Image (cartoon, rainbow, N blue to C red; front, side, top):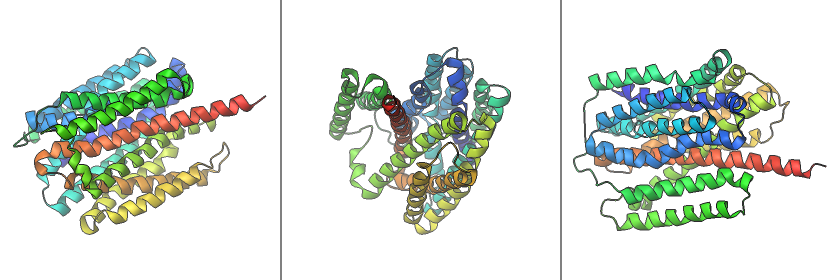
Length: 417
């Protein structure tokens, strides 16, 4: 059962790094701007972040296996459509379909794991394996993506998901038992709409800010809508007997800390993948395959460190892995700010290894702390909160770091004679 659940995480994780490696090729075919490339990545994480909590509560209500299978089917269909996209706008739209399916995979799979592995240390080890699959998919993604893009073309990167998705649907029907929460909560359409409005307006404002102007009326309006919707969501959820997100959980310092760490870590990952791919192919002039091989040390380190972190969490708690992750990510970030077009390869590899070390250590304790802080009866929502934090961070990382890069380039170009 753990293996079947991990298959869903594998194709979702593979999709992240595969698509990033293909961005320069997509840019050339569709003559896309940097903001267009940001939307190819951000549309996926934004839709997932908006729907994860709904998917988790839906699975608790109607059944986790059925929801999981529907998610697999939509993700597979979205992958097929992405491979046939006639334009950049079509690709972004089909990525959103992928994301609708993806939103039903990770939180539902995690709730199945949580209800299967009930003992604390056993659950931590299972989550460590889960985190290791993230690293494995990330490790294979750049190489597989680079090989496919270099030999067949960028459209082929989406074909990988189709057979895996079909096999996972079949295995789920055969081996995963159906389960529901004993007392599922009611749907919260108002809260769901406010979440989507908050995230969509915030990410749109950040991505389009450099092009339209940070002080332009549309961008300021987006930020105003995001702030208003966010405040409205918090106020509305406090009054509901069965909220989409129970705000009382944030009274717990460990849970709140895990949420903030998830947002920060995945913001770093989203920005790292976006800029590293563009740097390796557009600045260094490497092929997609060569760039993928350069990303391999980071992903391999993540694959190694995630299960190790899960074991440490199970035996000694989350503090040690989180501290180690923080140090590694900070050192890596400092070294990456010093990259140039002629940075020696060993220095680049060390920076990537440090990033993989930090990211591998940080993922399992986030999940374990978030799930442990919520009732097992609402395992779908518990896992969805942790996953939502990741996707919100990824969306913000792609939006913020990509927009900072565009603003910096613009400022430099306007200063030149």
